[in-house]
Length: 328
Image (tube, rainbow, N blue to C red; front, side, top):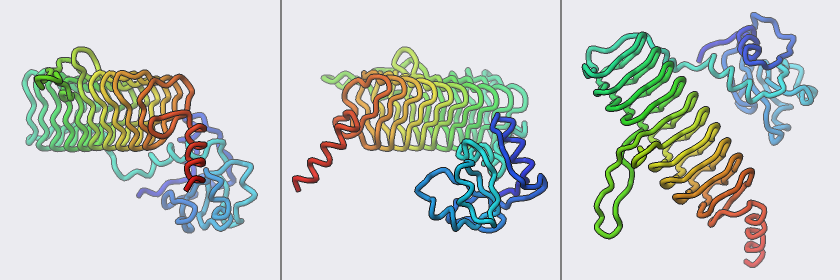
């Protein structure tokens, strides 16, 4: 973990239009970022959840990212760094201390295999034992880890990071994406005729929007004829299954072990909790929240929050849980 100065913290927050106030000197250094309960002198911490009010009073960190209204609860040994959105500030600062750097060094390993019918742009890093197949184009500043297989029929746009053991075919990955280890994008989906069990061959593709992160061992299937779509600025966790012809809007947050069946349409800014399952051919509106372990079998309109199986309005679900618990 890299040490950081207060000046670096201030610069990255102001660059992202976050106002920051503190009496800390610019050259003051921090060993790293720790939680309130695990921090020690020399660390930077953060306060974002009122559940930890009592712990805040006992914090041992050198400084804390905190809203102005909670500053009075800090002990005198911990200096406040006042921001309106401490969690956003934490996300931005975490980039400064991340030891894992995936910026391209422009070196293509001699132990990689590059098809002559592919096109590699400037400053692309391809690590040992990766394969770039035909009809693949990789744009500037892309990083490809070891043992990955890219292609055929793939475009990877600039500043994208593809980690180790990733497989991508029949896909367009837009700029500034991160594809974590073990992800599988663009493979044939689960489709066959029910009576004879004859497999339906897929000829479509996948498009991953800008600034999107795909977690480890997540699978996104190509469409049967058209396109499976993941929108811009989406965050998809590990071990998620997204079937053929699914369309997901911008700003999605999808937790681990979610399964989305084929041809479902999901709107913008949707949040899906871990282990939720969504049936096929549904329409999920904008700003919907689906609680963990929910089973979605019907369409959901905009701005709804659902839970349970079958998924229903979360307030109705809570009442049912209370009634059932009283019967026992």
